[in-house]
Image (cartoon, rainbow, N blue to C red; front, side):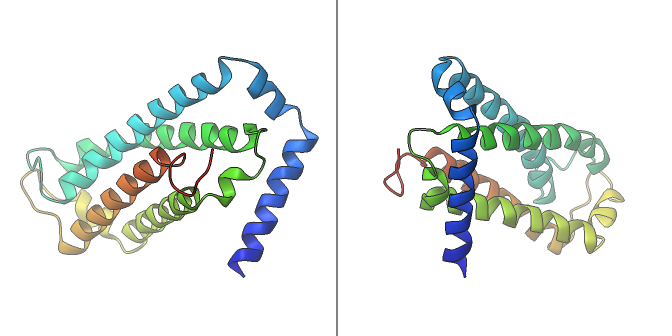
Length: 175
């Protein structure tokens, strides 16, 4: 089933690439790819800066920082995720030299899986009411154990996303 889904995704990406001028535009404008990489990195800094700091506080670091203050940074993390999503889609669709190469790459598959895991982890944090419980804590109060576990899972997932993103050209014999 997974292989069928992967094959249909690869086919859809290749069809899109063939029927638009986007890959040609990306590969004929010398600043397009470096600009995308720069924006992707800025988005990643915003995302990891906001989410990572919040996760570290969940784990007990920087106890002097109240959770309510840290929550004001989370919209910057969302903005970072949106920037990364937009530029990431641009990378996948702009790769005219080897259509479908990203979606066949094991590092890319792991990266997408970890992003999905991080999203599900965040969903659990909110749906279980942990987010509301944490919001009520004072600056020196430790987070409950389930919230600390979610913070640890989140940090591990995002570090994995960075690792597999960085190693896209190395793992899976791509590019």
